[in-house]
Image 1 (cartoon, helix red, strand yellow):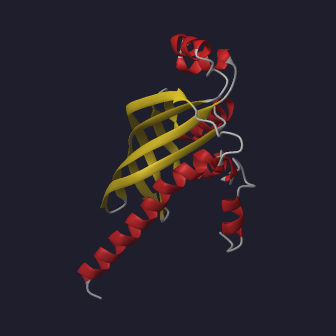
Image 2 (cartoon, helix red, strand yellow):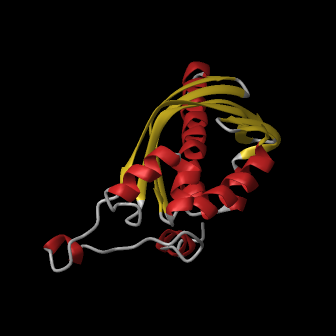
Image 3 (cartoon, one colour):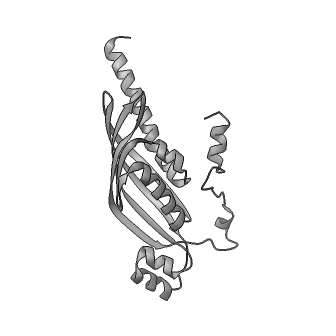
Length: 200
């Protein structure tokens, strides 16, 4: 293997490690795994995340507590990433969208979505059926390799659109009601089991 081939191979390895970090983020968020989320950032990393600005380690604690308090379920997706690597530094732009399900009384709905939305839902009798919030944008990351490991050094996000509406519910007795395979939001989720079986 010549020098150019070795450099190209290292680029592929670096990109694979960075992509693993970017795609592990949704797993940490959706499983409410604060330690996994913290592990994606360097200890001194920063996070500029819509309504949070500060330490990424503090963001991990804040985000997991916020999601646990406000939402019954979430599902975040990283759809594609543009990554540039230069030695031990990298930049990544990743498109995302996130699904969130909020369930609760009129006060909880009004607190998150606003009083006008809650009043409309109360008037049309949808206040108690759960509410879907979907947003999309980009994660903009600076990453660095320290001690041989890539981690996020700083992240900022964009929120480019938001949409929310009352959730659809299964009609009892309908065929769709039988399609059930619920996840878990913690370490008893099936994903932890299958990775543990191979020692990872």
